[in-house]
Image 1 (cartoon, rainbow, N blue to C red):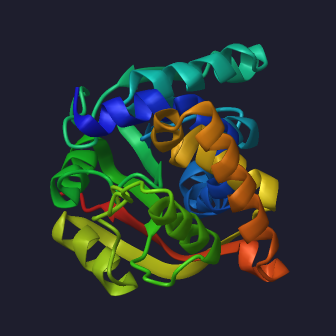
Image 2 (image 1 turned 180 degrees about the vertical axis):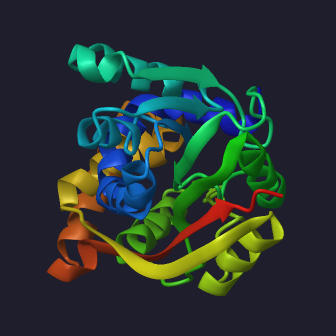
Length: 274
């Protein structure tokens, strides 16, 4: 298993509780980009990097005749999606199947799916060019790919700065980077990559993701998901002191400083048939 897959195995529970809700509205908006394909009879869908089902389960509820295969590099993430499916009504549960797989190594025959969709995943793959070509391979002629991911953004998030400063004060090393080295530099790049991979009728458009944290939800996001390993390194007393200080520092911030905003891009194209 890759480092990325192992990372998300450990993070699955915290992801579902604290990060999936941040991404969910922007993910669901992607479904509008494949509405026309469904209306024209597309029935076999693949969700690349299904995670805990931010795309899959809204799609199953929205379109009662589609079947969705969810693939993910993390078995734990996939199990989380399968657990949600198990609690869903039978008419949704029976139209979902999951499989551990990587975006650039899909274990399916050529021309298996009508639609491929992906939410905040294609920035993580080792080679997006290879993944796009592989997704095209498993699409039928005229099939649609639509995805949403991050655009490069260096705007600091004030709560993160407060957390990083406190880490330094307590003598903890702040690890640089967050595994998102593949964030797209521009909307134009998203369109160009799809065309190079053999897609036509390409559309790419920028948008913004916005999510309002509270002091307590941001702390829970750090402790249970984003910085769980850091907090595991702390003694009980050290963790208590750190969190007390962090809460104080966050409460000093202006109210709107807890609103997370980031640029994203929606990109779609059709299998060229060649």
